[in-house]
Image (cartoon, rainbow, N blue to C red):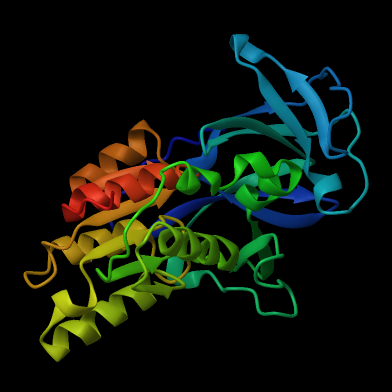
Length: 301
């Protein structure tokens, strides 16, 4: 199946691959997918997490295979099905699924954020729900699934401590991040690094509405001097937010840092074309802080 469908920049659309487990439909952003292959035997890893089936090496690249059915507490997968091979956060991971249905092109505005009865903010593994052809497709938070298996793949908060003593700075920073856990960790990390004046929003639309409100007040610099945005977010994604900011005469000089698990060669080109000032992959919280220092011209040492 061709997973290399290219989207125009900043249109607020994405491609979602629909797949099944036990007859239920789930989704993953096509931008995370390298390829889809039939299941193949893997080599078990001693003392691995119960959801890790093992490792294998197609084309001499080591890939960890994860039993997605086990992650969702729906039993164990057998020796059939498919591997969805992904790349995000700099990791190559294969997720074992039953079947693949197809690809849907949707707007981020069509994605419904799960309420607290479905997803307990920081603990949930669903980032959104799409209704297609009379059925619901649950989009899974693959970054959180991987971090739950191995916390070392998440934000490396200790990188902030390794930066040494830093001064306090009140420069206002706006953050757009839909994951409640990551939003909290990013804010805490920036505060720990000295950037104590942060406003956090849950998606690009909220961030854009906040920027427009500040702009209408007539003093945008007093409220926002830097924007940090994820790419994947319901309502409005980070690429659309970047495009809107860089096309607005009153906002275009505000540095935009894209901080996402999806930074690869293709996504980096898209971000550059939209005018992003910097793009970093998500575990690199230390590099994020150093990049904020750089774009703001601040010496926190």
